[in-house]
Amino acid sequence: NAGVTQTPKFRILKIGQSMTLQCTQDMNHNYMYWYRQDPGMGLKLIYYSVGAGITDKGEVPNGYNVSRSTTEDFPLRLELAAPSQTSVYFCASSTGLADPYEQYFGPGTRLTVT
Amino acid sequence: LAKTTQPISMDSYEGQEVNITCSHNNIATNDYITWYQQFPSQGPRFIIQGYKTKVTNEVASLFIPADRKSSTLSLPRVSLSDTAVYYCLVVLNYGGATNKLIFGTGTLLAVQP
Image (cartoon, rainbow over all chains, first blue to last red; front, side, top):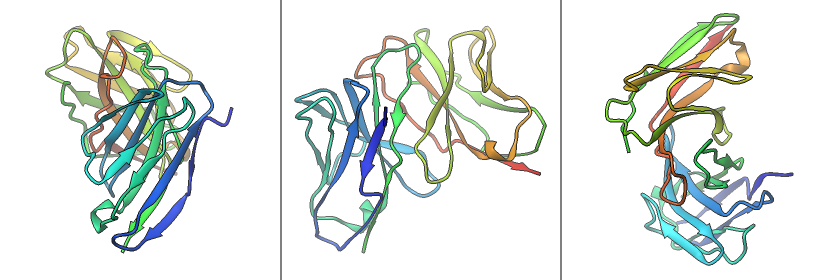
């Protein structure tokens, strides 16, 4: 299993541009998540999904959109990029079971908006 | 969800046992205590989870006293490769979509040779 994969690894955007961060998992997990991590900080939840066709907002959803058309894929869309969206973005997936409550994280996408 | 408090950083030497304590005074009856490890430029990785007493796996032990207001992650004989940020989190024990991970700033463990 490849686990959770993310593309691209790095990206530089100009202010106002848009892009989609890709996330794919091959573990047949129903639950998928997008986080952002600013320097020296913990992760903050942007959006999550409990299955294909179902998504919901996390702590910091403004400026982002998601979709979940398949179990495997959970892309994150940035519209009108702003410098405040400069961060490292992590996608994760889980079975949703409580014991253990384990989320599997991808390697991250480092995004810079200038 | 219960708020957790842990030291910002800790230093250790190779071969020592490291204990990282986390405080979670408002933990609810249904909450588990979970620890994640994050290396630089990588996503967090699950280490261990417990509810009470002691849990041990191949990489760590987790000690939880009877009042469950704190917990201690124990890493035996650390090596340089254990240098990472360690996060203590509480999660609800019924799983599902509402069972979100709330990350604080974690504890940066620096292992010296």
